[in-house]
Length: 293
Image (cartoon, rainbow, N blue to C red; front, top):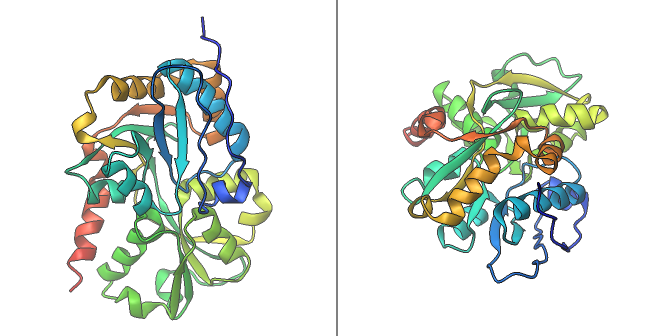
């Protein structure tokens, strides 16, 4: 039998502030309990309406973990990773790139499953009516990246250019960061950028919930597959009771009514245990980019 969900309150956010990775924080109210809140950091990967999702996810996690949960969001991956390293968060949903940057201190707890697998791709997108057919045709573009610590929204593109003998900073006429994958799609769709680097999962989910938006863009290039952005915690705390309980709650989410509702909002199938090998492709991209000089 499921435990009754605790009463809660959450600071209201606009959809764009949460879904597009704006500078916002959502701290859920704490149920009447002596246990300290479990602080879960969120990154700019969400694309569904945040209010119902947060309510459902909070209900599930608090019932499964028997303690209050706080959600915290920051504008960049770097900010979320710094909070986690400093011990100001218990866990966070990060990209694999910052995970590897902080690998001595951080470790992956779980990998989301999307379309039956714990992997995703990076897409380079252009305007739907543009005739370009290869990356070389984008020379001189105004290009939109997501975040300087994003694998799919930055690292993949710049390391691919390096592999092709190009200097990323000279290849594009100008580039800028949107600090949200959905905002990369919007920048290209609205003509603010001529091309962009985006998380394939985000583009594909947007194609389901906002098809009129993605219809104004076109996928020019797809990368190889990478381990999906993981749920991460401090390595030294992996065996602690609160972290193991959280990891169990993630793995059991697909077996619970509220858990399944949250997964449906996220367009995910569930969570599986993480393996370090899942991020070998990102590590290879990091080495390639680091050796550019």
